[in-house]
Length: 408
Ligand SMILES: Nc1ncnc2c1ncn2[C@@H]1O[C@H](COP(=O)(O)OP(=O)(O)OP(=O)(O)O)[C@@H](O)[C@H]1O
Ligand SMILES: [Mg+2]
Image 1 (cartoon, rainbow, N blue to C red):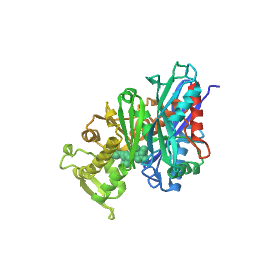
Image 2 (cartoon, rainbow, N blue to C red):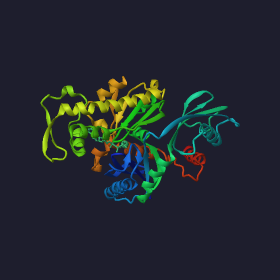
Image 3 (cartoon, helix red, strand yellow):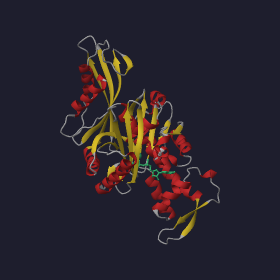
Image 4 (tube, rainbow, N blue to C red):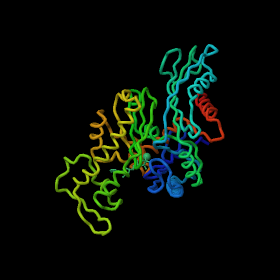
């Protein structure tokens, strides 16, 4: 019997809960199911604000994915995002006792790099192990067995507020699912849309969803910083609804159909039909007016992202470009506007999944699915379960996980 690994990604977003089911065996990775459920009232900017609504959206999304895949889903990998996620870099240095690097030395250097003062109300969600340095030689991925006197390592530690984490885990558990692992959204999306060369040279990823814009900076192949801006497509829709006096559903619809951040190309006379608020009557709005309403909000989001990039002090590491993904990346001409604001080349990142036989290839390639696709890629690439239950020591859990990793 071939060993088959079921990987289920649950992207609990502010706009929707996406479930993606993949099967991994010795022949590779195959996508077998997906589910999408609206989560409009469940979350605000990455935080669960309505447990029942979020849980019900999770149940709904997973039930669809079970039906499509004909699999029973018990355990899921869950995305986590929002302003409350913090990233901190750590560095470990140890002197090697023997003549070559043993597993214990790797454990020691990593646990040293992780000795951070994490306040009691925070929990480690992910630890991204960067390069090892063996006697000053950089760029080493696995130093085990190498001749060495001094071993160093770089790590990026991602923490979340305990309350936020608890509510998210509770929403998943209330849907009768187990949390197999967590992954910060910005890192997840990177695994779907960034090229290896971009990550090596230095790139920033920005996933602009419904409620937040999640950022991850990569350099030398590894994530070096993450941040999040609590603004997204929902703010754009609300502005349109308020200013044009149309219901939010109408605002959402015309935003997605006609939304453009460059009004120059829109003919002055072009109009769109909408239902007026309160009256239920159809009326016409100028597409240029729509553009004039949404563009300042998109600029605001991008300017806030730029501020986070500047505050990171890692901005000069972005040597290639900025890659924008998430549902809001579909706004027409956002690439050009972002490029002007960031003063960097910008491209739109779509998951590049060639799975024409699935029947849901379009979903797999949509920017809204970057996080879910990236989660599958991440957890399929190695068994990266790095999630601490409160009772367990996070360090020992991570060290155990890393042991498995290096023994492979
Ligand atoms: N064609 C389009 N033009 C403009 N905006 C769009 C388009 N398609 C989707 N969006 C917007 O993308 C947003 C949803 O994006 P996404 O699915 O990435 O969000 P999410 O992952 O649920 O939210 P978050 O990551 O913020 O928690 C919505 O605000 C939606 O209006
Ligand atoms: Mg998202």
